[in-house]
Length: 334
Figure 1 (tube, rainbow, N blue to C red):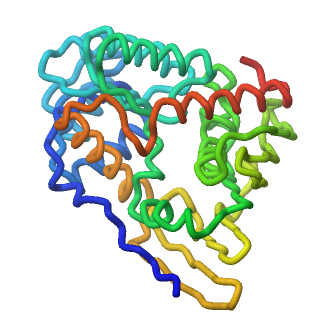
Figure 2: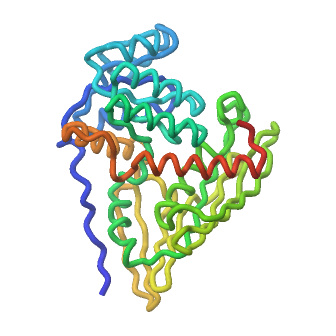
């Protein structure tokens, strides 16, 4: 009889405390620092922005010890243990290299870059500098995904269905092509990553796109065949709300992950005979989940490790390779 395993995720409050430098002061930086302060002993030590005014404002809001009016000054602070890169996607490569050149470990918001070449260059620089480097794909660090990871061998997944759609107002930066706008980098990262996690690297990918009102890509439908023979049917949109659920299906078991599938929450496993098993954890948004990855990073640094087995750089590079293919098929510019 199949039973649900217990999450092996350690208590984030027991992770060694790092002095974090936050590079960027936007929405995700606020969510990340809130999660650290509420759920860990990690220290929001310093923040860096493009202006002193912005840095001071954000620093006061998140209780940082120090605020810098430039990114160069932030990464030069000898007391910063690790830099969290929270700038727009198309600046991740530049800012990651800036931090690593200063000898800093880095946690880089997802996706780690906007092309396979950029992602590979980040990995090369990290190896040369001997620093820890990871993409902040927080979903896989949630307790429920540890439970799913333990179940995967028995599930024999041969199909993944996943979507992530949300409506944004026209003034949102996600509609700005100068900031790598559109659904692929912001939202497509999630369904693509979990499909590749369960099915392996795609041996074929076909994507279809539709424009947003301002002409940039507004939504994507993606079909993929994984190297292990399974298939994925994925969708992402910035012009409409969707259930944002995920399904992992095999011959004898189906797992439906509640929406939003990428956040803390629950799932239901159903066997072919009709048996139902339920996993639940407190449902929470970013503030209730971003800290798990930070705690894992702290443990890796304490152990002298420079990579994460949960989200190795090779996986981040492969994700960008697939995204490069999708952009070429749909006509999303570099």
